[in-house]
Structures are given as structure tokens and as C-alpha cells.
Figure 1 (cartoon, rainbow, N blue to C red):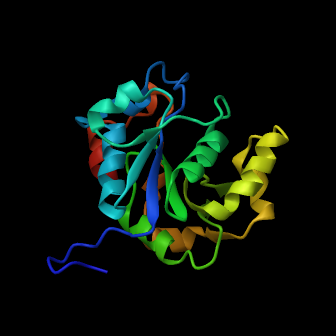
Figure 2: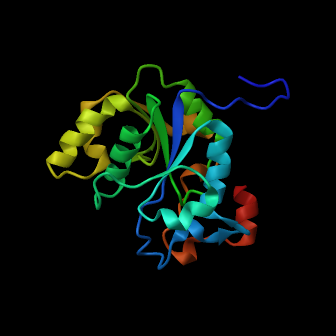
Figure 3: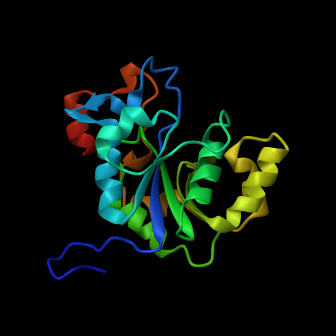
Length: 207
């Protein structure tokens, strides 16, 4: 749906959640605040997510670092679990029935792809991209129906996100479907080390 000015309307009933709880140990400093072509990584993420969702939340255990963004922030309900803890906290914290989760170090998110994933959610518990064998678990829509299964996983000290997928109803997008909206698959580019930051020419090619 679009407004009268031709711009797409923000999605209702889903909260955008940005995972910024990692320690960035491989990068050496907080990579979310590193600049790429003059814009911090997390600000690039917020720009796209804010164009899709009415409500955004940053999931972080260092809220002071992101206070300047003036967005709601939530700390992990159970510390030290990694991404599974972020999913659990995010779903427990939102008032909407679903949340769209992305990592803070994904600077080339695609608004059309995210909107498509939201549109095809139907009655699925989770909607995720899958390229060959790789599931992009930190670029996906999760509903609150996942909470009991996630909590079971945490209680059993199993902290890999993909471990609970066999127990729920997951919609996977294959590579061909993803490329209709993101031909270069640039949405899933993330930064773990300083030498993985694209140079200016590469940034221009990626968008």
C-alpha cells in the first residue's frame, strides 16, 4: 500500500527490531558505530527499517552507546545467550504479534525484500531467506508464537537459533525469489572485521 504521495506506507502490526548486542570481538570495537561512506552502520540499518516499520526497537546491553539515536532500547532479559537471547527479549518486549529482526551490521538492507517477506507471512511462525544450505536467521520475521519453543531451547541450554526451526512453521524464501527483490543478495552482507568494510567503489556498486 502507498500513500497519496506515492511512498509506501509503514507496515502495521509488526515491530522492527535491531540486534546490537554483540561484543564485536573480531572487529575490535563496536562495529555498529563504524562509518561506511560517512554513515554509521546502525544508522544505515535504521534508515531502511524505519521506512518499513512504524515502531523500531534497538536490542542492546550498552544503551548508552545508542542514546543519540533517540529510539526505544531494551536490554537482554537473559544475558550472555547471543542472538537467541535477542530474539527472546525482542518478542517478549513488543506489543505487536510479530517482529522483524535484523543485525546492526547489515548496511545494505533491501526495503522491497523486507516488505515482500512481510506480505507473504500468512500464518507462518517465521519467514526467513535461505540460500543453498544457509539460513539467514538474523534477517527475518518471527511471531510471538515462537516464544514457548525458544524458551524451551534456552532452558535446555541450546543456544543455536536454527535448533527450534524444526518445531515451528517456517516459510523459507529461496535464492530465485530473493533475487527478484535483491538481485545481488546484498541484504545479507555483514561486517565482522575491519578489512570486510567495502571501499568506496564497492559501496557504490552495492548501493
